[in-house]
Length: 158
Image (cartoon, rainbow, N blue to C red):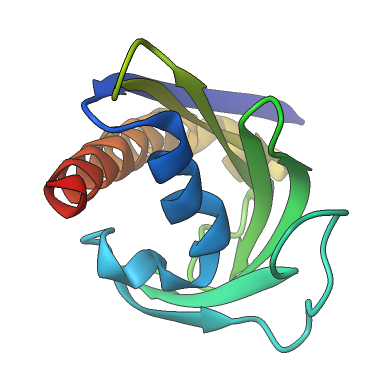
C-alpha cells in the first residue's frame, strides 16, 4: 500500500475565525463555495463527530465522482485543524482510503493562512499503475478547493 499526498496553501484576506466558520460551522454547506461540489448536506449516517464538531459528516455530489460519504475525523478549533474521511463509489477502486485535512491560522489583522492536504492510500496492483494520474487528480483537487475557499471567504467578508 502506498500513500499519495498533495497539498496547497494560501493567504486569505479574511480573519482565521471567518475562514474557520466557513470550513467548520458551515461544514455541510461546501456546495456554496466549492465549484466541484454540485450539492451537499448533512450525512444521516454520521450524526455525531469528534467533540466540538457541529456535525458528524456530510454527503456531497461531486463532479466526476458522484455521491461521497464524508465523516469528520479530526476537529481541533483551538489549533484550526479539521479533517474528514472521504468515501465514494465513483473514486478509483485502487483507492483504499482518502482523507482531507484543513488548517487555518491567523496571519495578521484580518488575514489567515489556510492549507488543505489530501491523502490517498492505494492498494493492489492498480495502485502503482494509477499513482501518476491520481497525483494529478489530487493536485488539481487541492488547488481547486483552496482557490474556491479563498474567493468565497474574501467575497463574503466584504
